[in-house]
Amino acid sequence: MTLTLTLALAHTLTLTRYDASQRKENTMVAVHLQCKAHAEVDAWFGTYHMPCAFIQPKLMAMHAALAMQHLQQLAAATTESRRRLHAGAPAGAPAPAGAPHAPPAGPRSTPCLFGGDWNLKPTDPLYRLLTSGRIDPALSQHYPSPPAGDAWLPDLACGMASAYAAAHGGCEPDFKLRAVRQGRGALHLPNPSPSPSPSPSPSPSPSPNPNPSPNPSPNPNQTPFIGCLDYVFTSPHFRVVGAPALPHRDGARGPYPTEAEPSDHLLLAVQLELPLRA
Image 1 (cartoon, rainbow, N blue to C red):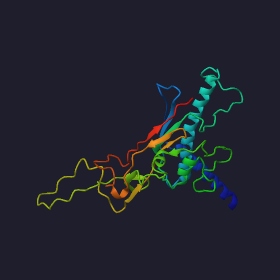
Image 2 (cartoon, rainbow, N blue to C red):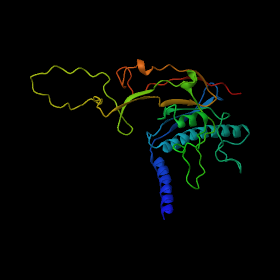
Image 3 (cartoon, rainbow, N blue to C red):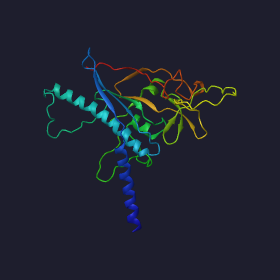
Image 4 (cartoon, rainbow, N blue to C red):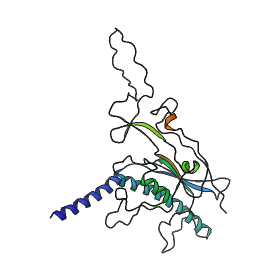
């Protein structure tokens, strides 16, 4: 009886993890763009805000892998549609019998770029998943083993390069987010430079401010978070020309936002080249 209960509990935990992943309402946006001057130059661009679920690394692995897989499959489907059109098949015609429903994506597919708040650090196994295309199944705390009967795997068609790392000798910036974290996943952003308290006044205390500042002063329960969570990932088709250097934490005034930096996330910008296809 003990063994049966243990197995049932493990099965329930697996299903609960998948259920929790499905219940997330994070939305991915993707668009296919084509150059007007050179119709053969096109690319898929996607963005996504990963769930802030650091205590559930397998859930985050599912979302990271599924989002990137989806973008790569869109790119592969565009390539396959173009190939069949060049071969004489009418646009929108069904694939021939026996053809795979979703062709594998890869370096020969349509270029794709994926940027967003991934909520993962460069040292995390999920960063290696996105940049190498694989995650080690031995990493039991992170690898999302599918339940019985589900053949899905978190592997990608190809690894994606981090544009900022490619532009700066393989190193990510020191930080892209500088805020104060309070509670579970919530970000509490205090005033960066609180004004000194006025001298005591004999006048009566003023009534409470009906519009309190959205950035109250820090309290002892807050812990600062400074790290790199935002990335622009590119398929092998792109050549990274450059990306503006971001400040080091030692020379940055924070926490953010401030008057000079209106968000707790630093702005990312990359310059890319996409060669013409023959």
